[in-house]
Amino acid sequence: MDKPQLDKRIFWGAIIIICLLVAPLALGPEKGLAILNGVRGFLTEKFGWLYMLFTVAIFGFLIWLATGKYAHVKLGDGEPEFSTPSWIAMMFTGVIGGGIMYWGAIEWAFYYTAPPFGLEPKTAEAVHWAATYGLFHWGFTAWAIFCLSVLPIAYAFHVRKQPTLSLSGACQGVLGKYRTHALNFQFSFQDFPSDLHLQI
Image 1 (cartoon, rainbow, N blue to C red):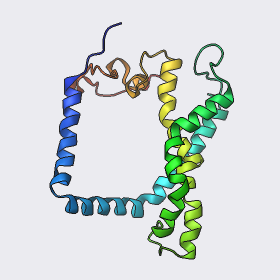
Image 2: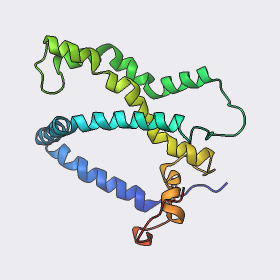
Image 3: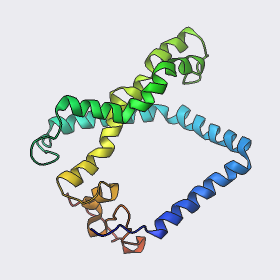
Image 4: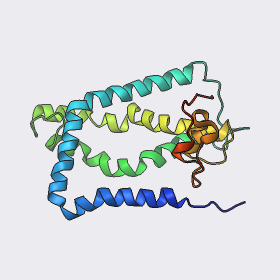
């Protein structure tokens, strides 16, 4: 098996972009923090509802996917290596095990002292949100986001037999022969055709 080659254009390009973003924050941390908090506040205040609506839409899409005409698609060949309870346990501990160990005990206190939507801290309304807001992090909508992101990769690997577990391999249906590989970037942006067609 050939040893994968690191594409220097992607690697150093990413390093340069990260440095350009981090350097101003390192040189002026207080001003940088104020700017980031302002951007975060604007996005959550103006578009928080859209984010929540989007996650609910993702959950609905996955329900349709699991019960519709694609429900028969099987990921993998032969019998499952592990039982269903074992898979559930591995997914639960692998995805949110570390996070819930930390946030499970203190997240309610965080929302009680710093509630969302500009509510007054340490009030009855803050208690209400502290008891319910965590469901957006640990409930069905959070799992829906995880599931939506891995389904194309799993489908490409198990059904279309792509050799890597990468997002680039999952994009072959859209990019066709212009697809990328996980560690070997095989095209330039000039190589893209003028119109891309879905090839699923």
